[in-house]
Structure formats: structure tokens, C-alpha cells
Length: 77
Image (cartoon, rainbow, N blue to C red):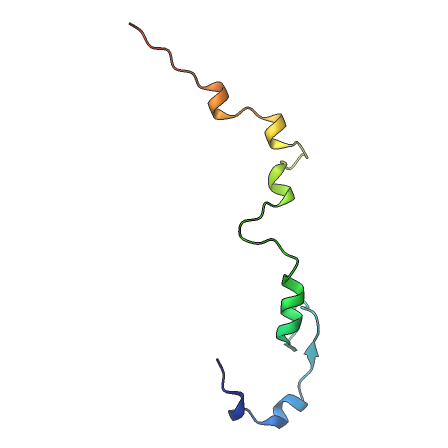
């Protein structure tokens, strides 16, 4: 963590702050803006809606056979 007591206060008075993440911006962004931008994103255990469909919009578990459904083993005696 940066010790902000060693940063001159005058530096912050000359900075432009972004309140939302902006592509290509060289401005400083606040931690609150980063938090707000990320709070509604998926968590690491969530399932994305796109992961349930292929690029053509086919629902994967309704369109494609499971490997366990198509592989069978026949044993000869």
C-alpha cells in the first residue's frame, strides 16, 4: 500500500479524476469507480449466459449430445 503522506497534496489538486473507467484515459480513477464498475460482474463461481449457448445461439445442453450418451462399450465373451 502506498504511503500517501509522502505524496505532495499539490499533486492531487492538478489531477483529473474519472468517475467511471474510460478506455484510453490517462486520468486517475477512484477506487469507488472501480468498485462500482465491477460490482455487478460475474463472480468466480457464477455461470455466464453465453456459456450456455454456442455462437449460433443454440442452447448447448439441448442441442448437443453428451459424451456419456454416445459412447458405449461392447465386451466380447
